[in-house]
Image (cartoon, rainbow, N blue to C red; front, side):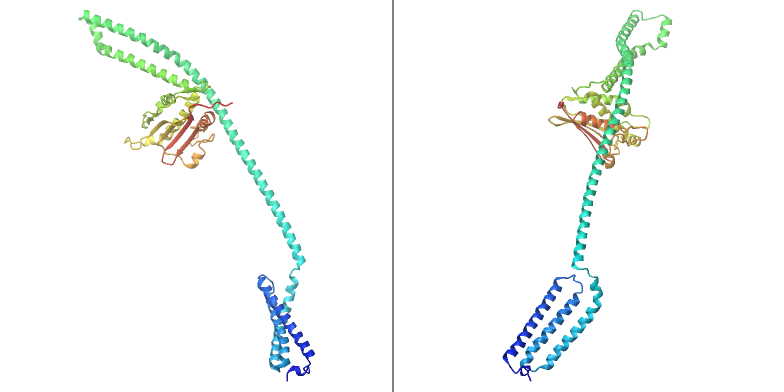
Length: 438
């Protein structure tokens, strides 16, 4: 019979059990749905399986209360019993799952412990951030100090290079000055006396001609002496000999004049000069190094001069730059001079080009077809005391001093462009008129 018969179908009693079971079933249903949603949102929730079992148990309990409402009017007690049996199985299984998890659940930190751990972790993070900031500041300070030390080392190298260069130029000045004084006097004596010697010889030859004209048949002794000294050849060659001596004296005089331009006692003031004259003086001094020698072919000098205005510069210093660059080009061509077979295909050559590159700037380019240089060598090329030459052959100061002369003293640029096997090009660019600065 329906369960309502037990209540004698009293409306108040029926509604009491009906509403109680209905609210309990709805509450169980809402609790189970809340647990399922909570587990779904918390992917990393520990023991999520137990939470789902609890949700299933609560649903089953709600179903038993629902069956309590159903049996008030329908006597389906077998179905109600099966629902209770399912609820019993789920509850037993949940209890069996829950008991082994208790020790693990005790190990899970509480909310307070988690908060304390989080606070400690945040404190550690802040401390590490402070440490990183301090470390970064320390690294910046070390980098600044390293930069200052590097700059100080570079300044020290430049100062040392300047001292060595000044001492070298001072010694060279004394040497050149002494040589010029010693050479100039006898050369001047020879050069000026050659004029009188030529006149005397012309007078003597004229006298011999008059003697031959008026005494065509000399005595045998005079005729024998004339034949022994080959008087005809002597008369023709004597003038050529004196002309050659005069040319040699002029050549020595030109070399002396060129050396004056390279002496450190040259003008310290800026002067407007012809750049080509400085190049020609340099080539005149270096002509012995570029000419052909036993085992070495000659170096071909190609001059590509443009029309240039006079340039304000320190004459002696700029000529030193020309001397250093041309000497380096000659040294770079040393091996190719040995290997040159005379066919002219890769004949050692130096090109000197000049041009006006801006309204107030001229460029001088010195190019060779030597072995060239690597990028690593080019990066150190203008550093003091850096050299690629063998020990004892180079001081490593030539290009460094040249760079300072062009860049620091003439507000210009000195650049190098090269590649292995492609030769080297040194480009000098200096203003035509220097800007006066206090």
